[in-house]
Image 1 (cartoon, rainbow, N blue to C red):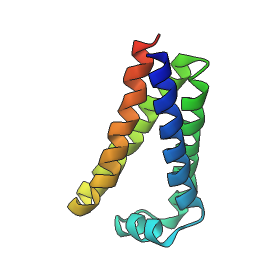
Image 2: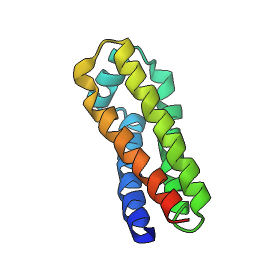
Image 3: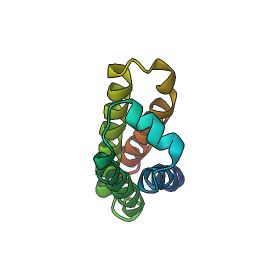
Length: 116
């Protein structure tokens, strides 16, 4: 299970870093989607920081599993919040991206527990 955790943690950390980068540089697609949900531009940096922190925590979890599990739980909560934001804005076609990220965020949590 350790190798599976490492692979999933590294891949998901890359996904989180890419998502955070999109918020920091204010890519047009990302900006349009998030502001369309009613999220102000002033939240972009804090949201990106949360994603970068989760990515670093998952990578640190390779060496200290409880930290990786905690980072994974934080990512799960982050993407539950993203799903709620889409549902509140009645953006059902935008549910796929945070839904997939939610599933990916649950994987390192499960594998982290299994590899303790």
